[in-house]
Image (cartoon, rainbow, N blue to C red; front, side):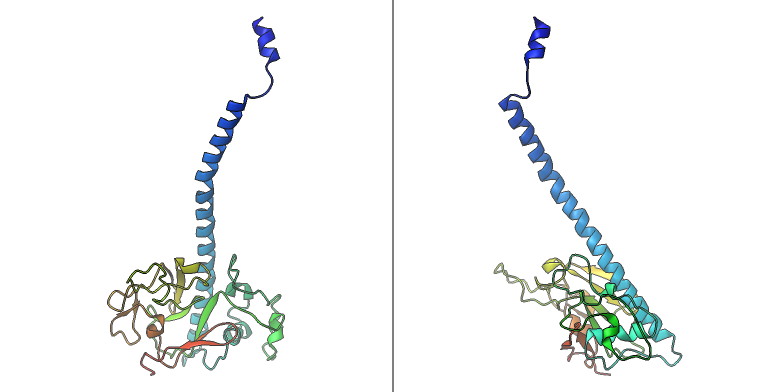
Length: 246
């Protein structure tokens, strides 16, 4: 009779099925945030590595000339990037567009760099484009290596992004940035890259150094000289206008 009872049982009861669904739901609620966190961390690491390669290539470009040189007169980020490409220091356009960045457009399909050519189409299609990074032109030779930014995650951090009604003036990346207002990377002249959740509440609590070493700042434009130009892929985003122009 016992064997007959076992053989006669089919599937789960409704209660057992509901319990199984509830357990799966709990496990998913625990796993999904953890997986998303790992994926976001990996995306940030990959972006940081790309920025490091850009900064390192720029550093090598400057140091390989005995008289010192920099990238100056660029009117767009694409022009800036082409200087490194045509001189053989960095000819991979994928370094300028990060994975998962919905605000960047990958228009540069294939690198075919001809040093004698001035045709931007050597990098692929022409037309509207955007990088995941802003690049800085006209940094003077002899600039402080460890405190002067040369490139950073797209978007200029400011203190106007707080929508909570708080009186905080913490300078954050805009929500349209690569990582939203969660933060961004900054690459410095010496090639090191740092992640910043924000740039601090004010100049006294700023996480960057003012151009000329006169104190802290939470304004990235104050960390570069006045004549320096911040470039998107398409053109000028901002000039510092606040640092020493020399």
